[in-house]
Image (cartoon, rainbow, N blue to C red; front, side, top):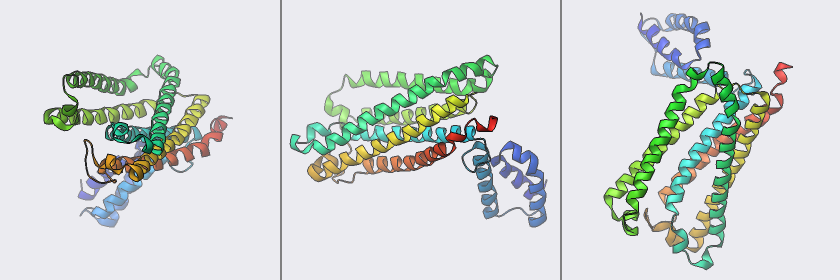
Length: 314
């Protein structure tokens, strides 16, 4: 095997299997004709990998119009779900940072930040309801898949999500039990050991959320959804994207209100920085903005494909 062939065959892993089976040997032969047996440059390999990722995106329905409308809606809905997971992580950081803001802010200065904070809470709750209801809506399709002999295709991701969830429940219970035996100052930076344990718990929480989201995406791509369910879940994803706008808007309103009227609250506390632009908030906001851009692109694709769902079968 030549070096060029070996490199191309490794790059072909980035392409959809059907594409590789049909065009892979042709790409290998063409590359050997152009580059000989000496191998590809880093730039050439990067270009091939990029093309493979674009082919995968098109096959999955994430770009172009070659995929059926139902697949495009489903894939875009899963993009929104992943965006929501990123919002959950950023929101958890915001919640920890803003834990005691009311007690540190004079009553006369709470109006704008209070409205923003309430918006974040309500929007987060609504988003959670949307995700839970959407998951329950998909249960009948999951049961049909299992009854049809498809359990082997979803057994591993479901088991992974279950293990991640049970592990986080156990870790949370243990940390909460420990926290009840500590004083307030110890829970808020006074105990280095507890602080390290809390940080480890947070990292495990993010990992568990990533595992659960990835498992959900894997299972969702295999569900035999009806056109009606596809449209309903697509609309739910579009509404969830609007909900994320309110979460981000509420965070920014809270931040702006405190920066204007009570800047000391932003610069003090557990993650004290002495500035109204604390890294924790900046990081949360940037993650939310990036996730909202991705979710917005997904929502636009959903709305652009929704009317065509089912039309390809008529």
